[in-house]
Image 1 (cartoon, rainbow over the protein chains, first blue to last red):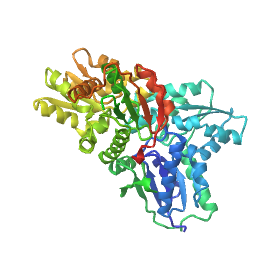
Image 2: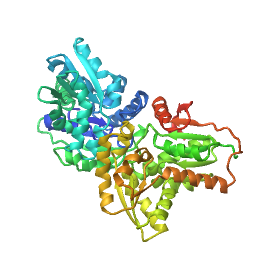
Image 3: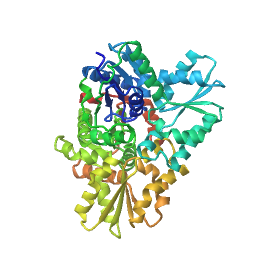
Image 4: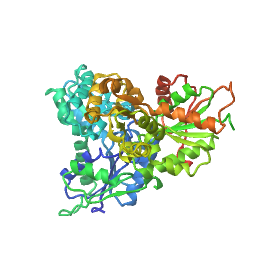
Length: 268
Length: 268
């Protein structure tokens, strides 16, 4: 059981930032990744649709014999995690709770900003989780729909992107927040420019890192860590465009991706 | 037969610019529109995926008794039109050929720029059709992946959008083109700013308008025009988010949309 892989899924390439953190923190574990590139993006789709998609993918990963599943997509974590959680027999971890916990623990003035896709912000789940931990914290959400296309256009370091960041973030800064949660898996790739615009007084919380830490705790607690000295074997599946995915993945991940396979996930 | 509706489909809301031109040119005709909002965007998906989606939608529209189908999506026209055309029993019109014809007829210096999604530009179909008409014309393509999210973010008139337009278009202007084809259905909504950046010496071709004109000719030639004095009845279907679609549609169309329905198109 212990040497089985960890399943990780996202709507596309964004979840690779979570993979990256898992690979750094648990370098001996194997990963089976699924990117739903045929149906990306999830951010503007309904709860019902996202739940159907997430269930298909969880069943696909289970068919590959995973010992745990990481939902490396904020929208799927927001909309589908609770439903799927009760349906599957292995531990399942989303990206929202770990980020929410760190933000709630870290804020000094009790004012937190959340940035993400429209779906994540509208779900209000970050706010809900943070206020469960500390009801006196004020949480302000801001959807930033242009960030993902800017990252995917290779413009993370472009001055136009900095202007767009200013536009989106200024509303949060006006509310005197001291913490910003990067509530979409693409956003860590904009960490530098968001940090510059937000200034030194604002802490950035990266849920990808916090999720890897929670996964590590869950595997340790459940005695599910792989045997020491294991050689990891990662496999990447997508629902469309395996070659394009591989190119992007190789620009993000610390290891080179050898295999990327197309799979029809709708039959699961 | 003649009073049957016209079927129009797109990956999402973009095809409404084609609907708008059809409503202006053929104000008595009824339209059944399908926007594939659960699977938008099409621009970054493979030919095989787009063909499967287009076939499902064409079958759905046929089940509603349409007398003709307009593929109001450049990617679907590029990837799927030829295959679907041989499978269905009613006239089917894409947006690429009408735009290609007008561009080929209009250029004075024989140098044409095409802007569109990655899928449309990579398909090379505009270039192919234009050079079938006039092999001596030079055609330069430029994918503009940020245009659709900028339009959908309500930033069509924003200075940031103008900077992005400059970035994308300058490459074409450097090649001394005298005509630009707006090769994505969202782009007519950026017509003003693209025109300002391109300057007076460059003509903009709007395939939405040209497609409505071709539809009018096909219906006239096939004696399929509705009876004079007919009262049009339009119905809009989407695969996700009917309410959000209706809001956007009402901001574009000359009539108010009463009905928007969610439908599961995958069963067709």
